[in-house]
Image 1 (cartoon, rainbow, N blue to C red):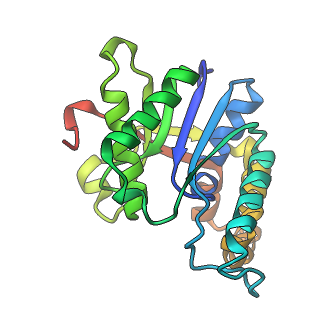
Image 2: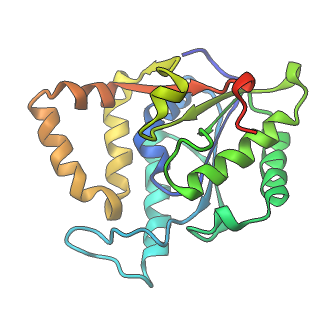
Image 3: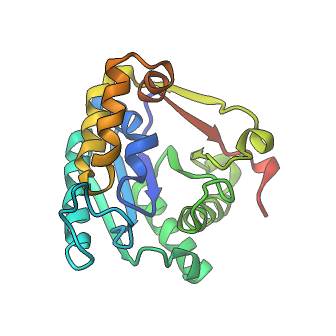
Length: 226
């Protein structure tokens, strides 16, 4: 993992960062690389309310906000931007408005690397809409000045469409921080962390692989989605 000038991470929901990039974010912060995380919503429409439940529809937004802040603390990330959109509405926002939002973030932070989802291969409509806005914003930058664009893709047909991920980060040194980030999102993850920790204790190969490696697709403009 090379030292970047600045990393911009853009996802729609609290906890999107935890599963796939928290080890990467923590690694960059350990290296002294500035990281900005723009989280578009508070995930207030999330189905999980804790297990046993400790949130309700009225309290969930504030709980998820506090969980997101704790997750960023676990990663060592200080520049968190909560962008104020409503959960499950990103796909309905004006395209140009969303592109301009990302353009403004890029202009401000001048990143050498941007991380988001891969358009059309990220399962959730908010994921795909966020990814489209990021790709469109980066595409408008002259090719010689564009930051690198790393994407997460996990639809069932991902390998068929893109092949295997071409970027693999060894984040084994950040395992404790990655687990702490996931645990911070307790309303959404407490039910799965018990099983995950059991699998880790049993040295389950797939769970260890997930914990210690984070896999990305560098965006291929020759295979552009538009």
